[in-house]
Image 1 (cartoon, rainbow, N blue to C red):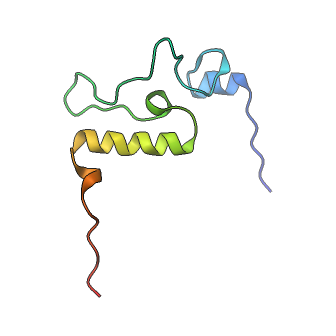
Image 2 (cartoon, rainbow, N blue to C red):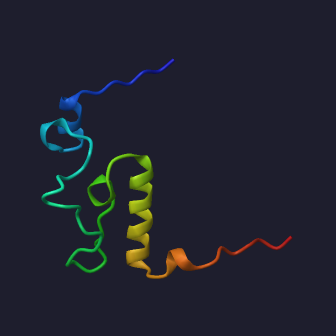
Length: 81
C-alpha cells in the first residue's frame, strides 16, 4: 500500500505556487499563454489551463498544436489489417 500526502508547503516547494495553492494563477493575472515570444518555446501545465490532470493533458495538446498547427485536427492513421 502506498499513500502520498501533501500540504500547502508541498505545493509551494514543488509547484512554486503562492500560498500553497494548487489552482494555478490568480484570475487577476490570468492564465499564461501557450506561445511565447521565443521561437519554438511553448508553455504547458496548470498555469495555462488550470488545475488537475485533465487540464494539464489538454495544455500539453495545446502546446503540441502550437508547435505544429493542425496537428490535433488531422485524422489518425489506421494500421493496415
